[in-house]
Length: 142
Image (cartoon, rainbow, N blue to C red; front, side):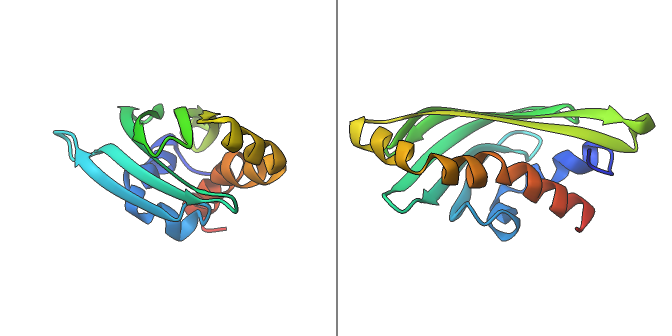
């Protein structure tokens, strides 16, 4: 649980350019386009892994304050079919939030599959489990 309402938990996700400052797994994040409400619509991300640089662009979708999701629309081919989703469930009368993060991706080739398999624990720890921990720390100041 995060000791903040859902809107406060979703707010940092609306500023992707700041993500690398509080989530150091991401090496570069750029907003390529914004929607008519000035929310990030296309977000380019770069993650430097020991074996390769992984770059992809997500098309973002919003159902605020309940969810933020992204689906891959472009990339350097090292990963494909990237899908990420945050969901925010109010708890404690709206004073707390259960934040859930889901991430899926497919390696873009045999060599990348082998490399990711070899560093699976690192990828899971930093990329999958690290983002929720970093968001909680960002929101609560921990």
